[in-house]
Image (cartoon, rainbow, N blue to C red; front, side):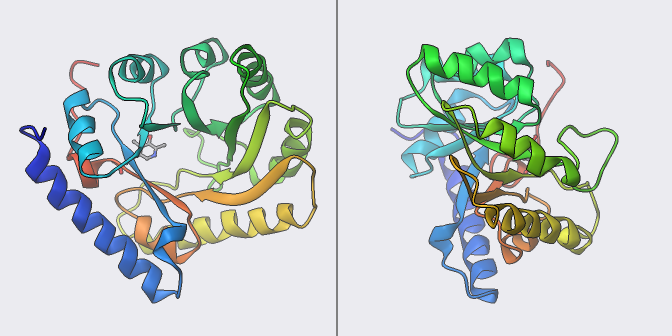
Length: 238
Ligand SMILES: *Cc1c(COP(=O)(O)O)cnc(C)c1O
């Protein structure tokens, strides 16, 4: 059941997978450790369908309302990742079906996720979003705020912290972001050593179209790739 998008997406997905594999090989990692999240925000459901048929299962969305609409029309086999900034009053749109929320940056948000998770009788996997580069425009907590926040959220039994996420600065040369990725990875190692109950530090969500190879070299277990798979985004009707 291919559609008008299948051919282009097939090339892009294969290309991306090859580059993921090559990045893993450079540093002696197993490519199976890296999950490709296809970031489908602003893109039509038909494109996601075409990717699904090509074997891509993990998709990332930024806007709760858009995610809710896509969940309603796409098969349950999709693993949905909420990767955008999340307001507390929007958690209800995504709490039933999101496989993971990457953008938790406050105890209040985690408490709301806990409440919604209880309603749906599930435990929701989350990542703590860290603003490693301390950019004014970005959400996420500072590196020194992560451990205290992790300790507080660990007490919520329907929220499971799986690791950390960051959005690196937009740079021309991806090498410039290597220290950012390295910092996030070191932070996750340090937190793992604290042996906090009910949390894991196994997931590192870092790297986008422009810098995912560097992120993989620095330990990313999830890369979030939009443009590299779906092409440029058009926000004109958003
Ligand atoms: C849009 C977005 C991406 C994908 O960006 P590309 O540069 O298109 O790969 C990844 N992560 C987050 C949080 C995003 O908002």
